[in-house]
Image 1 (cartoon, rainbow, N blue to C red):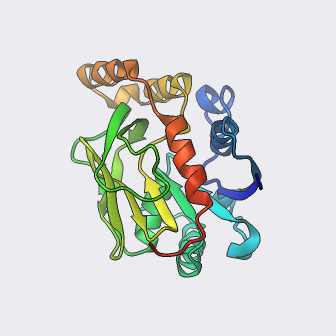
Image 2 (image 1 turned 30 degrees about the vertical axis):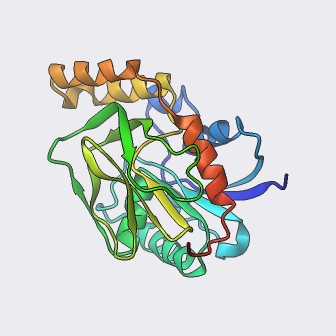
Length: 241
């Protein structure tokens, strides 16, 4: 089986002692997830948070934009170039997966909107209910994901299809053709990492909301199922369905 050349666009660098000193960074979390699959990958990490991007969409077979605690609405210096790269991938029908921040960045780059959720922080484990199926989504099922966000996509770009929603995130997953695929959630998180994130966020939550989020951790997340979906998606040649 040929290896997929996967470019990971990292839009976060964990600097806090509680996170950065104890856990792998975003790119490594995805590598650890995908390395559990039969499909093998060759990885190239681009530190997009520092302004690094591929010179051409053809440098890799597919791309993934990671999550980040940063906001797409905060005017970071590297965002315009990232948006240009997203639009270049769209034009070339290059497989592009966005998670959390990546999901939101793809939405904005293609004409959608991102804003704060009226429900505040969404933390813990939450199921995404998938109402539409794409070729790579097998086995087709609802998936439990770790989640950590207070912003979300509020308007999907034109030409995109809603794939999945959760109780607190109406636009939790969307696609465009067979070359763009997104999720607001975090298939790459582990339980210890999720617990650390929740502790960092605890002061922003009421005791009731914190305990409710903590209770959801009893649910088994489906990150590995999503990884299999992603591997099939990366093998798509970007042809419209």
